Structures are given as C-alpha cells and as structure tokens.
Length: 356
Image (cartoon, rainbow, N blue to C red; front, top):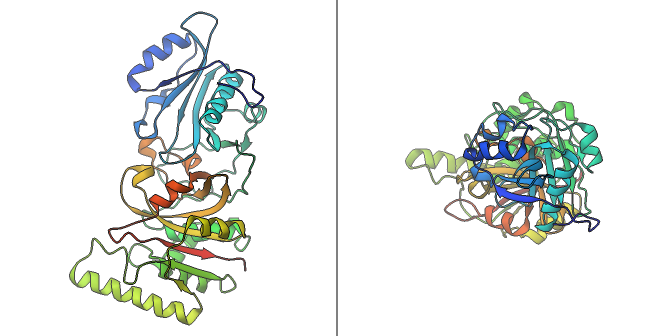
C-alpha cells in the first residue's frame, strides 16, 4: 500500500465483526475502542479495520473503522484511534489502491485540525438530518480523483415519502434559485403536496410541480414508459384513480411547458446535462445501496471520472449509515445505470432542471 507520493504506508486490513472487539482491544493496548463501532449492525456496508502496526509484533499503533455503501466508490472513516495521522494516511492509501474517488470522515472524534492536516475539507453541516439518524454533527471529505464537485446543502427528508420534493428543493438551492435558509419542513411538504401521486411522486407530476413552483426554470421529464408508473402495488379502483392523476399530470405538463422525452435517458446524456450546469432528479431503487427494492429519488449534481455525484436525502441509521454517507456520494456510472431501472416495468424516470 502506498501514499500519493509513493511513500510506503504500512498497514493491515482485516474484516470487522462485533465479536472481534476483544481482539481489537488487545492489539490496540491502552487505546479504547469506541462503543459506537459495535452499537449497530454495519455488516451491509462491508465494515473493516485499517490498522497501522506498532513497534511490538502483533500490536497496532492505530486503527480506523471503515465502511461504505455497496455499489459506490468511496470509503468512510467512522472513527480512528491511536496515531491518527498515520492511520488516516493508511486509509487514504487503501482507497487509492482500490481506485476509489473519495474518502469521508465522520466527525465524532475527528478534530478540524487533524482533518485539515490529512487533506480533508469540512462538509457543510446538515440542515435537517433525517429523524433518528443518529449521525455526527460534522463530517469531512477528501477527493482522490483531482475533481472537486461544488457542494450543495444537505437536507434530510423528514418523512418516508418526500424524497422527490427534497431533491428538487436541494437542486434549486444549489443552483442559487432558492435560499439555503428556505430548506425546511414547510417547504418540503408544500412541494410534495403539489407533486404527489399519494404518497409517491412520479416523474411527470414532479416535473410539473417544479415548473409551477419556479416558472423561470426550464424542466424536461425523461420517462420511457407509456402508461402510469409506480403502481405495481395497487389494484382495482385504487390503481384506476392513481392512473387518472398521472394522465392529468401529462395534460398539465403540456399546458405549463414541460416536455416529456419518451427515450431512456443514458448515463452519457446524464453526464452531459450535469456538465452543462443542469440538475437531474433521478428515480432509482434502493436495493443495491440499502438492500430493499423501494423507488427513491436522488439528486445528480456533479461528476468525477467514472462516477456521478449524488445527494441522497435518506440515510439508514440501522446500518450505521449517516448523512455523511448520503452527502456528496459518488456512484459509478455502471452502478447508477443499473439501480435506476426501477419497478416491474423496468423504466427510467428523471426530471432535468435547467438554469433559470
């Protein structure tokens, strides 16, 4: 394992399991292993220890608990103990060896001084963390690809169904159309009420709501499905009235000037839109990143080599997932391509918001 300057970084990488804590404590000697390392089941996020060997054989001078969402291209340091500069350098080298785009560091115990000395930049604090998220108040990021995408504000959805509204609000705040201070629960629920198909937001209805809320922002909906979508779970009368609402949304789209592109949006076209300063609200399944097949809106707002940078308004506290994971999250193009084919109908839905 080597550093950015090709100086060898001696380290050990081993899987982390809650039952290995006594072994950790033996190897780390007087360094106390944080209780949060084993407070939740992190197994879905490939937890592992990156350690720096000590002077005595078998002992470690430092260790970091490292995790990451599946189908992404980053590593997150949950905590580091012992020789902090040495073990953080080891984690960065480990990420570089794997060809990853980014390393994040949760701010539980990390000091701004240690983070800056290691080449990390402080993240803007979350404006409204998801309820019961249990995340840190601070976090840090270090990009490894040379690209540094502009940082939007992070706002966590406050319900299970307002992801579409939140991604639109964050997109407009990032574009300078909406003041950051306006990102609050009232704005979240107001926009959701305009866009919802009860309770989900389907692509056309969301696009129409964005256009009506910000008439100066051009909006295009990309939806390669002819009929109503996201109704797999509905039958009979419930399916019929929800389908009717989606047909009304298509009529409204024509009236307010929202074109509907029936071709499937490609990753190349998505990158082109982002490079042109546009924002993309993309519907995807959480099966890859979180383990359950639920349609979910994210914001695509930046690009680095081989990955699209997204904002995910939801974090899964049960797996140790926090807003630090969900914010400035790089997802490989191939992974995003796969996870954004949703529903039994296998369609892709996106709302592209252009510059005012």
